[in-house]
Structures are given as C-alpha cells and as structure tokens.
Image (cartoon, rainbow, N blue to C red; front, side):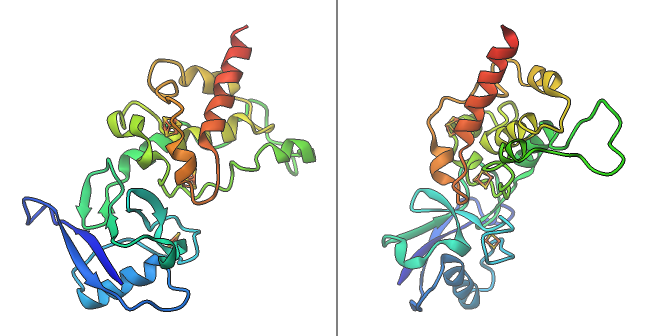
Length: 230
Ligand code: SF4
Ligand code: SF4
Ligand code: FES
C-alpha cells in the first residue's frame, strides 16, 4: 500500500513536500502501524504517538482531508492514495508534529477546574445520578485537538476564538452541579470571538474520535446565556 506523507523541517527546508512510501498491509493494521513502518524505513520521519489505544490523544493527523487519531484508524478504511498531513492551521514543528500551544492556552482560558464559593464539604461533593449524568459526553474528551484544528473559525482566529475543544470543556464545568462560578464563566465568554465565532459548520463533530458533540455544547452555553440574560 502506498502512503504519501508530509515532510517538512522548517529549520532546514524552505518548503514542505510529500514523500511516498510503500508499506506492506498486515491484518488489523492501523494507520499508526503504517507510520511506524515508515519510521523504520526512514528514521528522520517524525510524528507524535504514545498509548496506541485512542486514550492519550497525541497522534492526531489529517488523512485525505479529515482529522483522525492514527492509532484507531484502520488502514483498510482509508481510500488510496493515502495522504497523511499534519493538523491544518497549526504551525509545523517537524513533519506531522505541530505546535499545539495555542490550543492548550484556549483550554486554560476556560478555567477547566471546579470553582467553589462555599467551603469544600468535609468528606465529598455529593451529586444525584441526574446531576452526574449531565457530564456524560463531556468528561470523555481526551484533548486530541482533532475538532479545533478542523474548525475554520479556529484556523482564522486561534488567539481570540476558544475553539470547540475548549468550549466543550467550558460547558463541562458550567454543567457541573458542584461548580459555583456560572456567572463569571458566562461573563468571560461574552464578546464577538471567544464563543460567538462558532458558525455551526459542525466540522468539529465529524472530526471527534470520541463521538462527542462540541457544537451541541456551544449551543447549550448560548442557551444558558440567554436564560441568564432574561
Ligand atoms: S460548529 Fe463551531 S466549533 Fe464546530 S467546527 Fe463549526 S465553527 Fe467550529
Ligand atoms: S472534543 Fe473530541 S476531537 Fe475535540 S479534543 Fe475532545 S476528544 Fe478530541
Ligand atoms: S497514540 Fe494515544 S491516542 Fe493514539
């Protein structure tokens, strides 16, 4: 099977190029296995990966125009010619490795931790099963970045627009019955960019390897803002 992979070392090369490799197809082979085989053929080829099980979120790449996690993408599901590129819209450090600092900065900006006004309970925070269920579809995010780097609004305004991953986490804490900073969180999302730059194109939903729905979370935040405004 032939794979064309993106090669670029900005410190040494003026322009990126695509390089072709032949990889022997094995039963059950994932895209990550093919990338590892390419690395065996040319050890200068660079990409991130770790867990191999769709948990760490480090091996996000763009394949034939769609973002995915290489380790859980069966190679047989991909149409030839297979073109593997780095995430779009992020500065390339080397080959498939991009600089995700802005993505993490936006995550940090939504204060992804519980904020309490009252003192912590002596033993534990209690939640009803219903309250706990509000976090389903939110806490599972592995911060892989497949969504935000497929979002045109994030490509154009990565410093100003939080992007789908960070906004999913903003909603994760707004929806948490233990959190007591709803007003501050909503105030912090006001303005034309941070939240409202989402144009509901839904690339993010298609790209998420965990089948999460950032667009829905963004809609929930907007609804809560309206309710609070009334
Ligand atoms: S729905 Fe919003 S967050 Fe998702 S890709 Fe579109 S603009 Fe980006
Ligand atoms: S919402 Fe999905 S695609 Fe986006 S960072 Fe989380 S797991 Fe990855
Ligand atoms: S290597 Fe960890 S998610 Fe793919």
